[in-house]
Image (cartoon, rainbow, N blue to C red; front, side, top):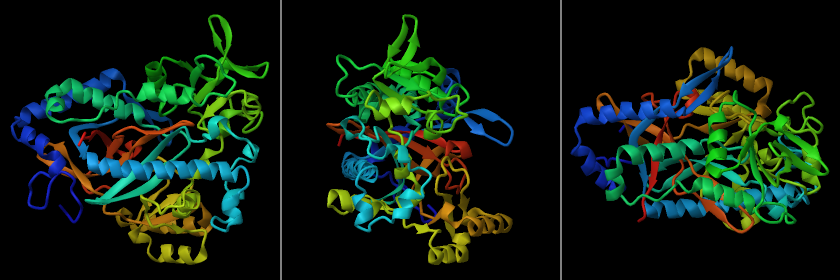
Length: 472
């Protein structure tokens, strides 16, 4: 399988442990029936409106996310190990955020350089001294994992601002249940469909301490032109809460209130899908029409919970990522259970020199980049692309980090010719409340649909698979 670890097949071509039941099922299926089911799944996604926007040179283009019907399967034992590592990491991230907005002990201890915090555009001085309700900064986290061997998992990045993709995880499962109900009677697959209920419960548990009765929760969206608007509407609907835009909200008597048919009603918890910069035109970008004037002042006074807290972006900054092993150890007193990918910080002259010399072998990413934009995959780049990127690196070295090109594991997709291996990653979704860290069993598996491609992002032509975590 080209030197990559294949999660479904052993080297001798037999089905690996977690895949044996589905292997028997697959071998008994008619190939033309499976291809018909594949087309049916696409039709379901089209009718449901499961799309995302790709931002091109002119305007956003709406696309269907390709879905592959062969599930990615993780054994109960493998998942147990992952869960422990994810929880450890998420607790450390929360402790780190509290620390850098208060005493900055990790900086005083010399474990993270002061300039990595103070000079970071994701660091919000307005959050200094502010303690969010329940001390929770990252209410919803997406930890991107890649696998390189039977027991080798690495964290590729931490999504601590507004992680997206959970609606695809839920719709993928819904589609599989509809199309192949028989598979779920043979395979004991753990449930993911209770995520919206758990999300609402987790958000409500983070309401300000003075909030009485059932807290009022709302989802703040930038609007229909946002790439993840489908997800915002989907989650609000599934949670049974209001979907609001900035113009639906106003500050009144120290509370953030939303417009309803019965006048303005106060909100206790706002699950925002609007970036920090656009959240409050009085405190951040004055040109923003997406946010709520004065919301940060209400938040600082304890009048509302904002999930995720403003300023959490510094925890998923790719330069800070390179310090995560030290961060985990500093706040938990334990060695990290999940490894980081080795990372060169280009702001360091020695590292920059190494990266420039080995550019054709490395993956280079923007420190604040996301969605696969602004990155270079050295082995797949042309001489012209390498030369242009070399100039970018020299001009703004602190804007980039570099990593080795990992041998990402493969899981076969159903191609015209039958099963064909494609590279995958995994984004498990984590809910954090004052009393617990809840990890949904599975997550979003993104798959590179082009042969040999390592880019799994939907914006760059990737697709998704249903992710099964087995009971045992």
